[in-house]
Every structure is written in C-alpha cells, then in structure tokens.
Length: 334
Ligand code: COA
Image (tube, rainbow, N blue to C red; front, side, top):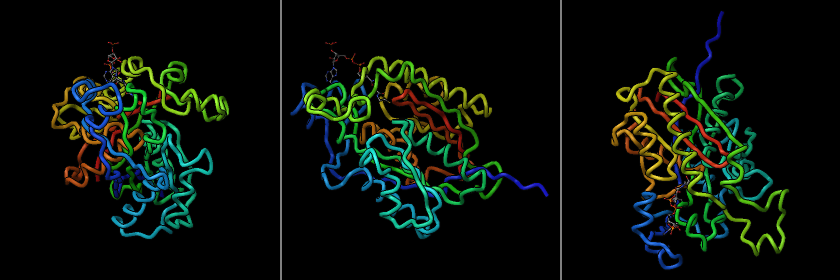
C-alpha cells in the first residue's frame, strides 16, 4: 500500500514582545535623528526593548515555547525537535535551542540554532517541514527570536533606529488533510554580495573579542543601508513573484502577504509587484521595528490572534536578511 506523504502544517502560533517601548522621540534624546525622518523613511514609530541583562534571547524563546505548549494543550515531552532561529544567541555555544529545551523540560527533543538573520524563521520553517514530511518527527517547535538591543550600537543612528527585541514561534505537525500546510518554498543565499554589507564584524573566529574590537564597536551590527535596501527590494519581490507563478496564485487568491518587516518601503515594493492591495499585507513595523528572526512568526501569531487566518487561507511568507539570505514560502492554512 502506498503511504501518503503529508505536508507539514502550523498548528499553533505564539509571540512574545517585551513590555518596554522605545519611541522615536526617545531616540531623539540620544541620537541626531528625528521622528519625522524615521517614520517617513522606514515606517517605524516605536520598538520594544528587553533591558534586563538577566533575560537573554532564550528568555523570550522560553516564553514563546511555554505559550505554544499551553495553547496546543500538550506537554513538553511531546516535542521532538526545537529549532531556534537567531543571530543574537545567548552565547556562541551552547545553542540557545538547547537552553530552551532545558528550560521547558522537553526531554525527548533535540535541537539546534539556525543562523540566517532576518530569514531565520523562513529557513527554519522549511527545515522543520522536512522532518515532518519525512515522518522523522511528529511535533517540531520553530522559534525565531532576537534580542537586537544586545548587538545595537546606540551611537549609530543608521542602525539603532531600525531594530527591536521580540520572538515568535509555531508548532509544526503533519497536516490533517491533503492540500494544506507548507506547500512550497524557494530559499536563496548570496554570500558573495551579502557578506560585506550587513554584519557583526567581531566576536567570531575571524576577529575574536579583544580590547581593540570593543573600542572600535565591532561587536555591534554594521550595515550599508542603501546596498541592503536595493538588494532587499529586488530579492523579496522576485521571490514573491516566483512563489506566485509556481503555485498559480494571483492577487485575488492570496489572502495574506506576510513579509519581513525591515522597511515599509521594501514591503510596499513587494506588495506592488504582487499586485496586492494594502489590506492583504500584514504590517506591524510601526509598533515593533525589525525584530530580525522574530518578525515573521510575530506577524503570523498576531494575525492568528486576531482571527484572520481561516481554513484554506493562502499565505505567502517572504523574508530578506544578512548573508544575504532570502526566501518565500506558500502555506495553505488548515
Ligand atoms: N536620522 C536622521 N537622518 C539620518 C538617519 C537617521 N536615523 N540615518 C541616516 N540619516 C541621514 C543620512 O546621513 C543621509 O544624510 P545626507 O543626505 O546628508 O548624507 C540621509 O539621512 C539619507 O540617508 P540614507 O542612508 O541614504 O537613507 P535611506 O533612505 O537609504 O534610508 C535606511 C536608510 C537604513 C532606512 C534604508 O537604507 C534601509 O531601510 N535599508 C535596508 C535596511 C534593512 O532592510 N536592514 C535589515 C536587513 S533585512
């Protein structure tokens, strides 16, 4: 008898945003910037910060993981695999995924961190889906989280205004019916062009921590905004279009575009290429800024909480980030 390969479906979503808000006005007090510039160039009005040094990225992930278990009504023992997408792990090692596994007591789970910056969750979702489709795992937890405040240089106005802290996640399981779940994905990377335009120069094996690297602020995010902007607009729109064509999706049949939230202008350019009107585009950049790997799952969880995802809803997730990494995923909500 032929065994049917079921696609992976998201059965639960959750998010965690720290309570403390930093507005553009707050940034005006520490940087040569202004609310008008930030709002018109990026769409960001405020972002969240987890100031407590005792609460690293794993804290936010653990909050998400506990909510996921609660909402799904299962115990941690049922989780087979935990993937944490992050570029601000608690430490280089051990993996933040292992810390989360320990915190929630998921004694049957293995886990690892995935480094793909703002595309981390999209990469993670597709990776997790493979373990479900192969039948190797029944329940996979995918969490995207970044404590961006830990790697931001608050004396650099070109980056400090853009990012915020936050986390989101999902549980993936086999779809209950054919034709639902994660139906398609196209993932890309371009290390040749990406590696010099968006990076944290020190702290790895290339430039280990030293007095000099600290003095030169090399443990913070560095970005050539213009280059990244150009690359992001092209890549996100291209991959969104590719996903539409491959799956015969049209502006009418798509219910939601869930794009990475780095800049409102990048999101508009992607939506325009897809021919989508604003009411089909998930946008929360004004509240949270760019939460890197947290962004896409936070968007998903917010839509889910608002009751905007229905059986059969066609979702297109697209992201772009350091690496460069980018990708698109087509999900038919079950
Ligand atoms: N406040 C006020 N002025 C600022 C500023 C700030 N926070 N940051 C830069 N400026 C100034 C610049 O110094 C420049 O001044 P000049 O014209 O006198 O030289 C001017 O504003 C324009 O700067 P520029 O960098 O050309 O602005 P931009 O329109 O490209 O917007 C970003 C900058 C960062 C918002 C934009 O490039 C961007 O969003 N890039 C992609 C970011 C991204 O996606 N990153 C994450 C990876 S997904």
